[in-house]
Length: 396
Image (cartoon, rainbow, N blue to C red; front, side):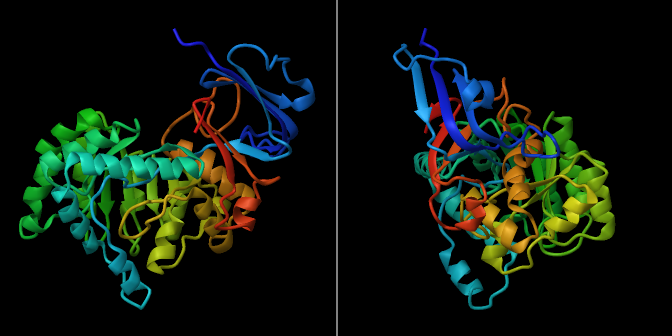
């Protein structure tokens, strides 16, 4: 049996615990310490009261943070990391005025179908290394670039090799070969494709949007997934107003993602529900659409998460620090709100109670910044501030 490793991180200048205290939702501690035993947090508190551990002991390490800030690992609850090809030309065209349309997904579908498992696996490993280096320790991955039974099954299977948070998104768009037979494709998603992907998946998602799936189609697909034991998530209200947000709330979805165009009824529905509004500012950066109004959602009492939506068409970035900076600059969030949304908010969007905060019993997923405070994540955008990442108590 492998020895259990003990790590004491001490002299933390600013520790973000996300355990609310004295009106501070982020539970901030100064001159703090964290004790990790194995893959769990064992103790959190003032450095002056830290348990005594001997650095000479076997399997014991003492890390002096030197006044740096430490926070929970980022939780990216919306990515599309398994795909083939590249769509840089679309990005270039958008920067000269071409509008974004969901139809570009079909290009990635063609490239993904043509790629072998080892090619997809190698690209996925590179993306995972990239996001971990930027402080992301928990992440979700969607299928949706295969759109055949065999290809969706292999994307779910490959995603499951690197995360338990796998989402079946056969309802991403209607593939070209079914463009004149939409109902047949919906039947396929609800039957053979779902049967093949459910064993590898925790979630079911649908792109409820013009150019993708109608509210009625979305309801049918989500209901089929729920009947197979999958939990629902929804892409909605990205390209314009629609019924997707209220459908997500009605079905008890864990999260409804994008939320760019919201009516007062949408905001009211979210505020009165357990459905998280997951905002994806990398999309607006890449597509030049209006940014979601996070301030409106927060002030109404809705729970907000931030995620990258890393994908080759509309948000080809895996950087959660960038999402924080964009949320503060463009979406009306304070730095504290944005950090909470990128950690605890993402955990709520994945219905995880073991990540997103630093408290005894939680997974030891931490990020140490090369900065004295979390504010630097927005204050110094584009600067590689991540000094050290621990995932399950192990330095990455």
